[in-house]
Structures are given as structure tokens and as C-alpha cells.
Image 1 (cartoon, rainbow, N blue to C red):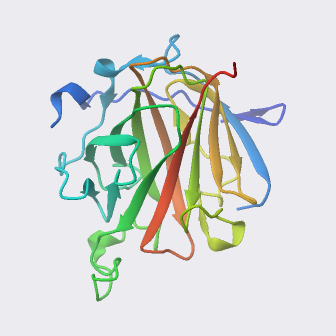
Image 2 (image 1 turned 30 degrees about the horizontal axis):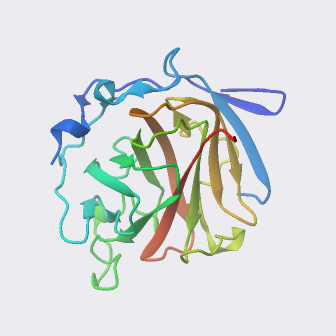
Image 3 (image 1 turned 60 degrees about the vertical axis):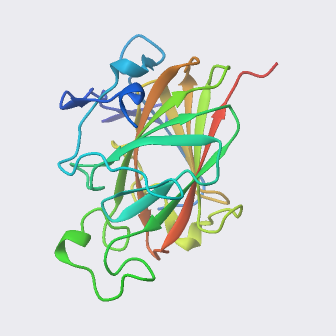
Length: 247
């Protein structure tokens, strides 16, 4: 890792060869930070059928009622509409991140609902955490995510922004503890297959924006990052906002 002109250059993100997924085959500071990283290839994005991911030992889980998918200690839902989760796997650790495969139907912002589902983590869980609950648990460590997003709309994306909210439609302020791993000034786990650089804002919003890239319709892009929360809540929200060229 090296710095140049205030930018952080991270190592090249490599495609994992453990498994190949296809949507077709499945039922600590305020202010801002800037970083950049190498592209996966010379293409702005990779075709959906060519995405190669590391699969988890637990395998993919089927969605239950209410479009809820569970992996590791958390459940993930597309219940608020505008996008569809197609597959999920992993436990949320650094070595085995939770991999979420989804498609966005337009360039409008969408919201993923994330809830604690492990024993002792949710309101219904009761009791203390077990040893297996401690990994990939926001209460004790970080939650590592890899999100594979297909552009199922009709317009190209030139930026992509994620925003964390503890309360729906309210900004996640610096003091609430929820963040894109704000303890680390520079994170080698923030990567993308299509965008060269990123910005992190911790105040007054908690946002992670990927810039300098392009994802055309029916292509897919991969993002990887970690979440942390010093005061964990059993439910929080991840807003996803693709950006299109201005007319």
C-alpha cells in the first residue's frame, strides 16, 4: 500500500477461483477520506456470467417469506423494493466474507435491511454469544461484505454510493458507532472491480462512494468493504445509490 498526492493506492483485487455464480442459474474520524485502487481488468465492468467468487462452506441459502436471506449472524432483505437479492453465502469474517448477489432494476437508490439473526444478537435471541457468533459480528469485530451488483436498468453507472443508516432516512452520525470501518484510516479491504477510486465520509453522513469507472446495462460490478459498529443495533440499513451521467 502506498500514498500519492493524498490518495491511497491499494493492492489489485483478484478474482476468486473457488466458485462461479450466475444470476441465471440461481432460483475513526470525522470528515472525509479518499482512496483509489487498481481495476480488475481493462474493462470498466465484468459480464455477469464471468463473475468468479469464493463460495462459503455453508453454501447458498434460499430466501424465505418477506424476501429475507440469512448468512452468518445476519439476515439481509430486499423488502423495500427496487432491487432483488439472488444469492447469499459466507459468514462475514475477513477470510469468508458474506457474498451477496443482487440486481438493481433502475438507477434509483434502494435500501437493504440488515438484521441481527445470530443467537444473543437479535431481540428474540436471548442469552450470550457463542464462540461461533463472535466471528463476523458487529458487537465483537467487523462484518465483511462482498456485494455483486448487476445493472439491470437501462442506463450506465459512472459512480456508486453506499450509505449506512441506523434509523431509516436519518443520517448515521459519527457518534453512533456505525461506519464503513472508520477506525482504519486506510483500508485495503475497500475494493471494486469497476471503479478506480473511492471516497469515505463520516460526518454528517456515513457514506462510501466509488468513482472513476463505468458499469453498462446488464454488466455487473463487485464491491468489497467492512462494516463496524461500536454500539450495535439489531437492525440497520444500507442504502445503495448508482449514479448516472448528467444530461
